[in-house]
Length: 364
Image 1: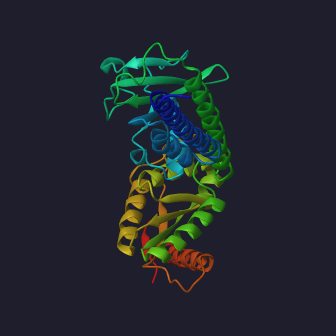
Image 2: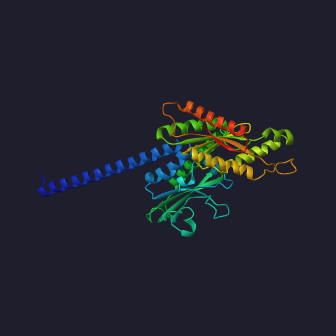
Image 3: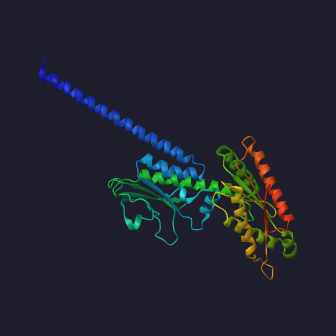
């Protein structure tokens, strides 16, 4: 017969085993939650169909998922191809301070294995311009043996990233990010090509009509002002007849460039057809539209345009009709409101032409 001491020892041992079992179950629960978070992150990353989704997933969701203080994405874009697409998508670089671009001629980005260790000001400052972590992991992003950028992970804990840590997991993470990044950029390029006028490089009519309808719907909901400019190059047929269509193309490209320089990032420019352009001005009253239209008119008129085949630069002018909705009528479908806004700007353009050209006329 067991003594009371033996019985008590068994009870304590049983309690200890029970506590250890609870600890194991709790750790298993925590591990399951971590795995579920990682799986959810992977699915969100893979499901990013647009550039904005991908950047938000990497810079905002990744730090929460992996318990990091900061994650930055640096891209190689020496020909400014990606940044031009972002501009056309109305994505301002100031929206995502953790999206960076490698400066040509500066310190090369890593192209081999991830580097882990303590933060080094000289090495890591360009990758973390707004925050100084204690330890970092810099993951090269490669596609088809070519570097496309790097992912930089920053932690406030010195021991989080050290040189003796295994890198299998973060190498896999970098591969997934690189593949998703390449897919998203290619998708955006295809959309950009399909919605871009190949001659001038600005948006085409399909895009500008779609964009205008979306912005009118937003203006109706938010009760905000919206304006439209209808722009026509004066006597454009004379350029084609006298100097040929190549010279006419040169004029179209230069006029489109000058118009775009006078616009805000939130505005949209599209070639409507022939020598006609349309500008959509968001959050813009009729007074804003008149001011911007006059800047465009002056920009085109003040400096002659050099073209091939002409002995001297051509003096080109534009006529502009401007119309505004302050705010758009909620009772009218957005598509009908778009048609009416364009018609009013077109009518104002007609009056600008009739009254002598090279001027801005506001719709009634």
